[in-house]
Amino acid sequence: MKYFSDQLPNGIRVVHQFVDSPVAHCGIIINTGSRDEDLQEQGLAHFIEHTIFKGTLKRKSFHILSRLEDVGGELNAYTTKEETAIHASFLAEYYERTMELFSDILINSTFPDQELKKEKDVIIDEINSYNDSPSELIFDDFEELIFEGHPIGRNILGTPENVRGFTRDDIRRFMDRNYNTDQIVICSVGNVSGKRFFHLAQRYFSHFPGNQRSFSRPKFVGNSAKTKTVEKETFQSHCLIGGLAYDVFHADRIGLVLLNTILGGQSGNSRLNLALRERNGIAYNLESSYTAYSDTGTITIYFGTDQVNLEKAISLIKREIIILQDRLLGGIQISKAKKQLVGQLAMSQENHEDLMLTLGKSFLTYNKMDGLDVIYKKINEITPTQIRNIANEILDFGKLSMLIYK
Image (cartoon, rainbow, N blue to C red; front, side, top):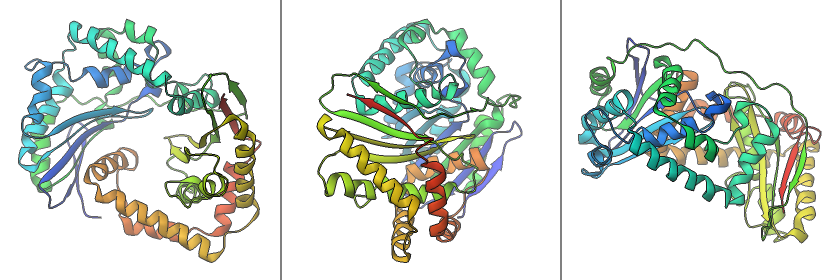
C-alpha cells in the first residue's frame, strides 16, 4: 500500500494516500475517548465533539458549518471509547480551506455559554432517544455489565445529570489533559500530492504547542460470567451474549475476525443467520461483532426475537458455538470464509471515506497501515486448528455473559 507519512516537530503525525478522484476526505483522529473520562466527566468527550463546532475566535457556529457546506462539502465528527474524530468530505480543490478550518476548530474553539446550553438539550434528547432503542441500548448496558466499575464500560453519551453540569472549564481541563500532540493523526485520501498535503499540515498545525502524553490508561482486570434479565416491556425479547476478547495487538486478532465472519458477521450465509433466520425463522435482527480496544476487546452476539422463541434461539446459538469448538473446519469451508473476509475488506477500501478513517486509526495504533496484500497473507495463513482454538478460548461458556431485555 503506497501512502505518504511524516511527523511535525510537535509530534502530530500526518498520513495521506493519493487517489485520482474529484472528492477528497480528510480527518483529525485523537487518541482519547470516553474511557479517558473521570467518573464525574462521563459524557464529556462526546460533549466536546458536539460543542467544538459552536464557535472560534473568528467564526460563529453558522460560519463553521457553512465553510465547507457552501462549496458542497460535509463536516462531521464522532466519539468512541478510545478516540475522537473530526472529518470532512469535499472537492479536492478545497484542501486548504478544510485544513485551515480544522486548525481553527481544534485550537481556537471558544465554547460559548449560550451554545453550550443549547447543545446540552440536544444531547439529553439524544440520550432519551437512545434509551427508547433497546436494540442499541443493550450493547452499552452489556459493556457496563462485563466491565463493571471500569471507565471502558461507561456509556459514551453520559448521563443527563453530568451533561447539564459541564462547563467551559471542564472542557478545557479535559482537552489539556488528553489532546496530546503525539496522540493526534491528520489523515487524508484524495487527489493531492503527499508533499502538498504535508505542507498544508505544517502551515496550519505546526504552531500547536507540543504536549506529549505522560499517562497510561488503567487496564481492566478480571472477568466473570454474568447473566442479567431486565424487564423492558418491549414487543420483542432482546438478547446479547458475549465476553472479553483480544486487544488490537494480539497475535490471534485476525483469526478472531475470521471466526466472527464465519459465526455471525456481515453476510447472510453466516452460521447464526442460517440457523436462526433461514432454517427456523425466529430472528430478523441478528449479528455477531468483535471490537478490539488498546488493551482488551469484546465479542458479542445479538438477536431480537419473540419471547416464546427466546430459549430456542439461545439453544441454537450455543449449538453453533459448540460445533466450532469441537469440529475442525473443512478445507472448502475455511477457504470460502477467507475469500469472504478478503472480499469484504477489499470493498471497504473502495469507500474512500472509510479508507481515510482506517488509515488514520491504523497510524494512531500501529504507526503504519498494512496493505491488502499483507492482510491477505495473514488471513490465508490461518488454519482450522487456530479457528477451533480461538473458539474454545474466546467463546468458552464459562466466560460468556448474557443480558436479556424482555
